[in-house]
Image (cartoon, rainbow, N blue to C red; front, side, top):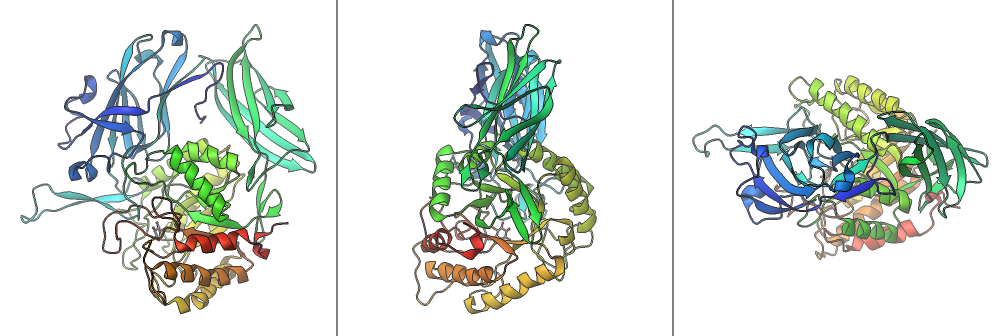
Amino acid sequence: MLYPIENGIREVKDLSGLWDFKADYDNKGREEEWYKSRLLDTIIMPVPASYNDITVEEAIRDHIGDVWYERNFYIPAAWKDKRIVLRVGSASHHAVLWVNGCEAARHKGGYLPFEAEITDMVQIGGENRVTIAVNNVLDWSCIPSGEIKTYEGDEYPRGYRTQETFFDFYNYSGIHRPVRLYVTPKIYIADITVVTEIDGETGIVDYNVSMQGGIRDIRIRLLDADGNLAAESAGTSGRLDVQHPSLWQPGKGYLYRLIAETLDSQGNIEDSYELPVGIRTIKVEGNKFLINGKPFYFKGFGKHEDSDIRGKGLDEVLNIRDFNLLRWIGANSFRTSHYPYSEEVMRLADREGMVIIDEVPAVGMCFFDESKAVFREDRVNEKTLEHHLQAMKEMIARDKNHPCVVMWSIANEAATNEEASVPYFTNVVEKTRRLDPTRPVTIVMTPLPESDKAGGLVDVICVNRYYGWYQEHGRLELIEKLLEHELKGWYKKYNKPIIFSEFGADTVAGFHQLPAVSFSEEFQVEYLKRHHKVLDSLEFVIGEHVWNFADFATKQGITRVIGNRKGVFTRQRQPKAAAFVLRERWMSSNPKWNEE
Ligand code: BDP
């Protein structure tokens, strides 16, 4: 799936801005066909943004069910004879899209884009209306999964219900990424896939272009970053050889520009699309993760798309601040915990040479309670699997060409100690490998190695563990022995490289205690340092991702003092003491970093 871009042929019109909005408290909008005419009694809502924290109404913040968005837009007369597409970057978690009252698209899954051709639904040269119903209900047929809990007793208000979620981030809802109109010719480039290889001094770009609406001659040019022609070809698929290529490398996101053009019968350019291409290779070999044949050590974080007021809404200002902080602290990578991030973040990571573990929203498939199985008929079941596979397909279709993406994470902390998780994940791993044979696959693990059953399926073992926090809380002195014991256990069992993908301590910025106690800045510092000693001593550990980059919102709970405070930065993106410790570690030399 191609990201909408502008060039001399294609145009994009961004419908971000102020929309009319209405929460459907009585759940009657669909039945009353609200999409047929203008919404009544609306309030103003910005797009993109989560709607939850914009108003001062608890009822809107905590709303369960449909909300409605609407706005008018114009189609320029010049778009006559074009193919017109409406594209939603993401809507959490289910959406129906109507244009002038006609249904144009439906989508399930809160963190991936969807689009519809609307050419025949719009008035060219006139005013049009788009209506989007967004629903945030999560059940076991979705990833992430959830449950609606109803309260029957007389002591509760009639019909009282809550949305139960089994993951540790606020269930932000709404239209989180831009809504855009774009146009292409009627015979158009529908998709491009590139796979890169390196053979000695030659960079190889294998490409495949798919067209829709007809057949045309295709011309392919690969330009270097200065605009010089590096290679060219013709036809829908082929190979471009670049002699002495500038490689895409961690920290140095060198990008070529692949320009695909279709030619009409007179040889005029009819459609054109420009794809950034990074030439690089990835391979897991023994206990090493190789990028361009060199061992790579992951330094960085699990992150979230999360900030004050706009929640999970795309914020380019925040994204640039985050990348500046990542660079400042010496991080070279992050995981898109626990869902695919915006396309804008992925494009930024390509440019910045940031290495990404791309995660599908399979989070919360574990109750941390031995007596409660998750992989069973009425919880994670066939329907969940169906949606999981669909999300993998959409995520790979969206992100397959990003050089920054080096691995697919197919789940975070699933109950892989359960026998029934094995056929389930066998299915997901096989499908993922079929869709993309070029990237390794991981599951981010939570059981102890003794009880895990799924590690054999994946290429890299990611492990989350909180010794000194959730286990043996406050006992900093136990961290080293416990951690070493566990990591050696994983390696012994599977003989695969390990990324320590989550460890962290809630830390309230400005709280100080000497000697350290939990929640103080001193504790977070000490906690990290103890981990570093162990990580440095184990050669099969190929990375460390601290949990979390920044404080983030969660549901209310007795262990959450206004959200999760494990951030190394505050939610406002200012450093806690731990940030300086990480900076010192990650910016100084260490045999682990494998740097020349
Ligand atoms: C891990 C989860 C992560 C949580 C973290 C925590 O993967 O989503 O936020 O614990 O509790 O289990 O801080």
